[in-house]
Amino acid sequence: MASGKGKGQASLALHKVIMVGSGGVGKSALTLQFMYDEFVEDYEPTKADSYRKKVVLDGEEVQIDILDTAGQEDYAAIRDNYFRSGEGFLLVFSITEHESFTATAEFREQILRVKEEDLVPLLVVGNKSDLEERRQVSLEEASSRAQEWGVPYVETSAKTRANVDKVFFDLMREVRKKKMSESKDKNGPSGKKKKKRCCIL
Ligand code: GDP
Ligand code: MG
Figure 1 (tube, rainbow, N blue to C red):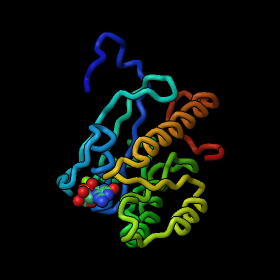
Figure 2: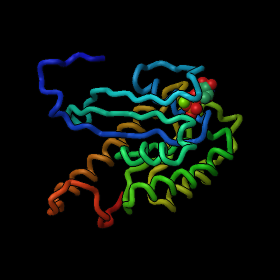
Figure 3: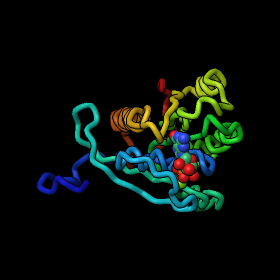
Figure 4: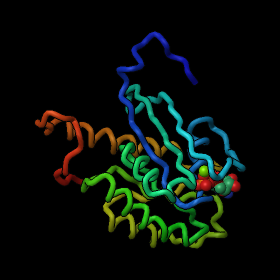
């Protein structure tokens, strides 16, 4: 949807988000549902790709850049580069696969290690909420884990589109909030990340 030409696109705020999680949890399906309003059932599982879209976030026109990761994250160097480039993370698991939930802890540690920050904008996303009858991860279990981590937990369905916009927009809000607080207390010469003072997610 490359419409707006005239207006200085370069001046739009750009929020970079990364889809992280085990294979098969629906990272690509969520991304494509958000981007194109369609449910893609058979997206190439090993394909990582990035997407950009102009959206209106609380009245402000911004751009979202989504990096949909795939198997390459197994290579630590590639993964670290991906994670370093991200400003916000959707940490996705499938509510129908407990193992994918367990895996979120490891992914989160990798993210925190690479970002070297106390506060990384992140949402835990329990996808495939339409498959309630196959649920292996209870709402309580996932919520309490997210609470421990001080981040929100949201259940989505890339199939029905439930909460799909919500997770991307909520994450962009977290990213924006962090950038605003950084630009306020940024005195150093570089705009580079520093150990951040804590604030509530
Ligand atoms: P990825 O490896 O994390 O990118 O996972 P994919 O997006 O490729 O999805 C893996 C499989 O799960 C595909 O067959 C999708 O159609 C299916 N899938 C993804 N999200 C959902 C969902 O919300 N509900 C249902 N029922 N199936 C989903
Ligand atoms: Mg994929």
